[in-house]
Image (cartoon, rainbow, N blue to C red; front, side, top):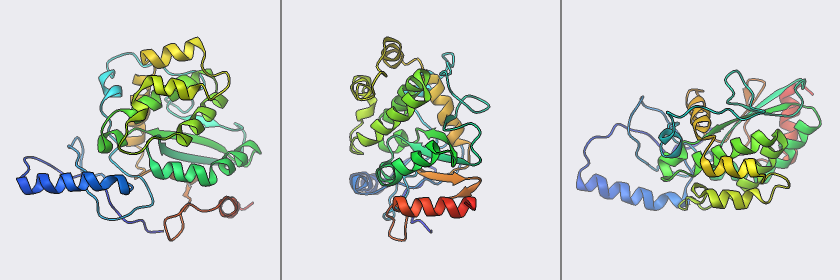
Length: 271
């Protein structure tokens, strides 16, 4: 599936009045679009450019705000974190014969659409042992949309992971089910995140509340986001099963159905 491009990163110095007006118009239009991520350099400033509707939320994988503000603080890795450097969340049986890598950003509207369409099926196939899921989380949309919601939600997800993988997965689902509108940085408010955590039975412990309020896992969130940036993945959502990227959107940029997803997994795994 070829996806149209509508967010780019470009070198930027001074802007003319015409360029500033064009950028303002693009920013006004972004609420009705989704984003695509293209990397065109290292350590460059970001601008948002729209060039059509897309099926994947894309942006540069370089966050600011909360994570970088605490980058000098010690990294506290949540209990139950996986991967060689503790930046991966593994859900499912460790001995599952296949591995599904899921790349998401909590502010990504297309991630939400995919979760709404096939999220339960994705989980069911992990629960029945078809594969285990490796979550690789990003926070790049804070750059394109403004605010700190992706990073703050990711840090709160770290606090949930510290309580248990199942608690993380439930909180992950609650966040996507209650994702704010693109122009609203709702996840940047830790009190709102704590309210949402109340929807997960047993999650809102004193330790969890303290970790979210004090930002205990913000440095870890920055590390997780940086790992995503270095992964080579060009956008969210991206699903890779045993090294093969799954085409989870149809030709009209709509998420495939649960039945189509199950069939796709069977074809990919040879099951």
